[in-house]
Amino acid sequence: MAELAGKIFRGQAGDLAKARAVEKYLRLTYTYSLFSKGQGLEDFLFVTRQGNCEYFASAAAVLLRHAGVPTRLVSGFLAGEFNEYGNFYDVRQNQAHAWVEAHIGGLGWVRLDPTPAGEAGPAWGRRLAGRAARWLEAGNVRWYRHVIGYDTYAQRNTFHRLGVAVSRWNIARALAWLAAAAAIVFLVRSAVLAWPRRRTRRAAQDIFSMAQETLERAGLRREPSWTPREYAAKVAAKRPDLSGLTRLAEEHYLELYAGLPRSKEEIAEARNILEDIRKRAGKRFWRR
Image 1 (cartoon, helix red, strand yellow):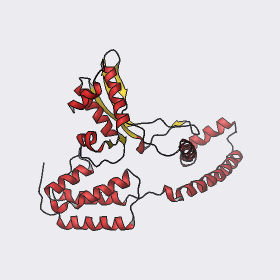
Image 2 (cartoon, helix red, strand yellow):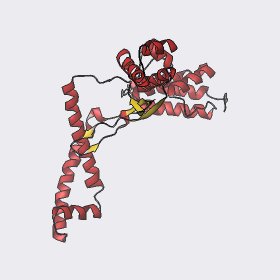
Image 3 (tube, one colour):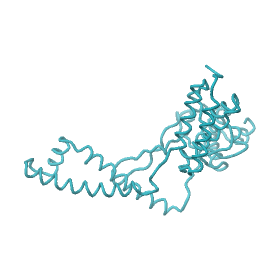
Image 4 (cartoon, helix red, strand yellow):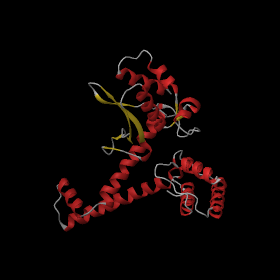
């Protein structure tokens, strides 16, 4: 680690120059991936050379600290997608991100993002898909705001803005118009939700959760700081006969982060592993 830090910072004068150097080095030298075959930061830096944003941020923090630059790891959401149709920022779970902040004399905490871009496909295709997704999301927000949440206060506010006198006749006409508009929105929304690509399955995640519950009842407790892979590795080290949990953890990752629904055969195999774990889990082996 010290040798790599020396290579990156050679000839760099000042903390800001060092911070930009490590940011550029990680972006250009390593590859972004949701999955890494390595087991830690050293594997990421020297073996697999690919990983998610947490690996890039952790590597930048450790390397800068080797150079004596105060650095902290930050995690949150990268909310840079503005919806021009609904006039709001759209923050989604898949926009979770990790980066670092380095303390530079005279500047304070400076944000650094060493993670390279991971988008694929032609730019025009991404723009077209993005515009379509934002248009649908704006319609979804309007559905909840003006239909699901259309209470008496919202009705009076709408009539006031339209300059319509609140009378029985006008309310009846407005409600008829609203019902027609709601029906159209409902049909469009139903068609969008029925589209196969929007269906999600979480069978693999549920199976891993059931396996974890079984093992925790048997005394194989998962600490809050352990990822599913780490938990599976510790279980396998303590109880080799329960190593099937490692396969369930991988299925869990593929479904949750790669967005790959598991096939019927894969789910059937996972259920068999779950049943085997339930049979083998018995006597408590570790406790805190």
